[in-house]
Amino acid sequence: MIIKPKARGFICTTAHPEGCYANVKEQIDYLSKKEKINGPKKVLIIGSSTGYGMSSRISTAFSSDASTIGVFFEKPSNGRSTASPGWYNTAAFEKLAHEQNLYAKSINGDAFSDQIKNETIDLIKKDLGKIDLLIYSLAAPRKTNYKTGEKYNSVLKPIGNVYSNKAVDFNTKVVSEVTVEPATEKEISDTVEVMGGNDWKLWIEKLKAADVLSEKFVTLAYSYIGSDITYPLYTKGTIGRAKDHLLETVPKIDQIIKDLDGKSYISVNKALITQASSAIPVIPLYISILYKIMKDKNTHEGCIEQCYRLFKDKLYKENVCVDELGRIRLDDWELEEDVQTKVRELWEKATTENIKTLTDINGYSSEFFKLFGFGLNNIDYEKDIDPIVDIPSIK
Ligand code: NAI
Image 1 (cartoon, rainbow, N blue to C red):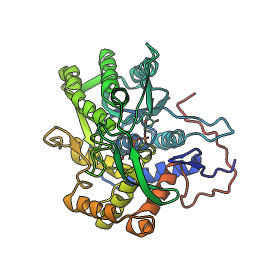
Image 2: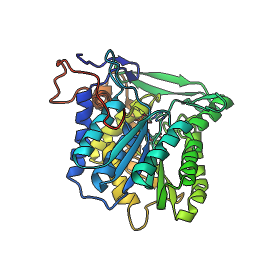
Image 3: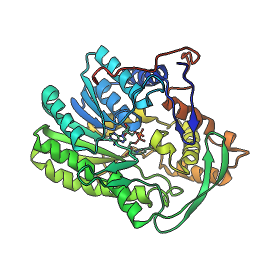
Image 4: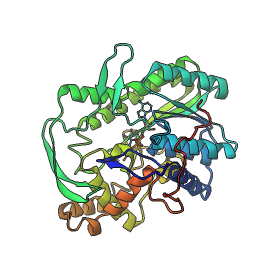
């Protein structure tokens, strides 16, 4: 099959196996030049196939020699269409980890289900005994309660008021105005159910009951705050409510793992181009502006740089580096005053006419397609290749 990008709105429906392999390899190469970390040894990552979860997996494996189990929800190829990028990423990750004699196995399925939780517990018992770190990096559009059959959908909406602001279509590069209607009460509670802390806590309860958590076990979930421009839609909107719920879950999880001297944390990360963030109105424009400023200032980071800094400078330290609410802050450079002042200035000025010079919209677009394995140097995109790629640990 000759595989080309097929974009539909903010998604791309194809992925390139060799390009995804090159993306994973690039992240590993970045770490190979960095100092090793005396970090975790046996790690479970929920949402490990793309974005922050994948970089967390790569980082713990290749900087701390950790054994990793990854859980995700991805689509293999049936020979007629390609697999999803997370499938190819994981195939690449396992291959490269095994070459370094690192343990790496994966489970594909719905992390919200009991079945996947039980499969994961069985695998930990069989191969690792106990885990010392769990990273919860799920970005899911919906959740099913398998006991009742009830379905919950996560939405990105403001609460209380209509939100109108500028946005850019990163395919056409046209700047326009978007208006998002406020969420209903049901949409708010559904979003909290999908993206809040309930399932994170359930994982910990089940793992604890199965006795597969080690002494001084640590767990992390990822959050975002961002700029006042996106505040009404994100931080003060439905997804922000879910993120508040994650933070409220921290003391509950701490209570469950108290006897292990364990600890849970929220890590507030930087805005980055991932499949999840591209779906949020106004975020592509915000990121295009932010990247331009942070690249000029030399403080720009991608997922792998963020994750390496998280483990090296924030978490695996004598004293974990946290703010007044106990949160790890990887958004420190994004929120520097001069950066945010400049973001507001460029936001006001951005139009269809100046978007390409004023912001990093071209960088956004290429990085978006890179998530799917497209636009990389040294890949022959005219070559006929087999879309069916096996993940070694998945039968
Ligand atoms: P992503 O879309 O790249 O990754 C999502 C992961 O969740 C994938 O591995 C996917 O397979 C998995 N997944 C989705 N539904 C699943 C299910 N039902 N069962 C099992 N796995 C499932 O997302 P991204 O952006 O890396 O987000 C991860 C976390 O980081 C989210 O909590 C997000 O809010 C947070 N975050 C993201 C930021 C960003 O700018 N991208 C910034 C700060 C925090």
